[in-house]
Length: 329
View: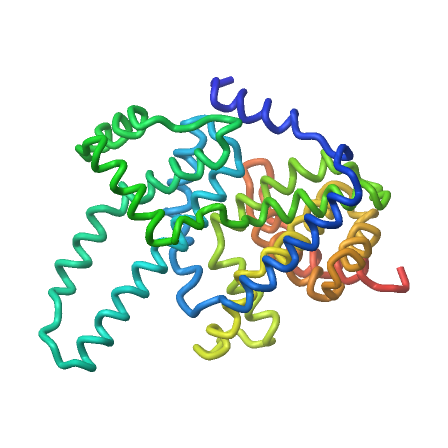
């Protein structure tokens, strides 16, 4: 087994549940809920447009190569997402001002080319900044970053690397300790453990990480299917899509869906109990939890794998989820 993989597995096995005081759990859960509500309210129309599969896969593979823990890869994706959204907003703002003042427009093609040329540098800077937030584990050094960029054919100096980090930090007003779905997942698993969940939190945790990776890598397909299911229409309008953006930024909803899907995979007979606990903890409706977990499962276990000749039919997954969610079962 490769050394990076061994280190990742070691970090997973070291994760412990049931060691946090209940008062701390209550305060942290309340803080996360408030943070999530604010993020949902502030969700803008362009958010989520940079969580593309190729970008997320690049970040995940780079984090694995540098032996970073999973939280770093999610944090890096969120930092990059916010930074690129800010860049897009600044461009639109400048264009609006120039149209209003009837000033000579900038060369947008040159500006776009400049952003494209620096994208890999900015991406790597986001991973490096995320690693610094997890300084207890491992920080990616400038030498490591420069060697990696050089291997890709990008020649940069240490000064340019520092400037790139500062550009990201200034653009986000130095607010880079962003919440990630993993924080919500792990907090809810901790609470589930105290509530007497029949499926051990440690078992759910490993499956949750796999499904969370899946959702990040298949972000658009998962949420597109969720949108179509919510409006009961296969062709949503642009307005419906824009209103649905707040759902994409709801990490609490994603977390309960991830845990519910994990519970279904681990022990579907206990699924109703797990979902009931999640509903009482978060206040999210059982139907919403079932819809999100169904979307995740149909893109996960519903896909063909080397060990399975035929995919699990989505209607069978849906039938099982509806049966488990029924109050009469």
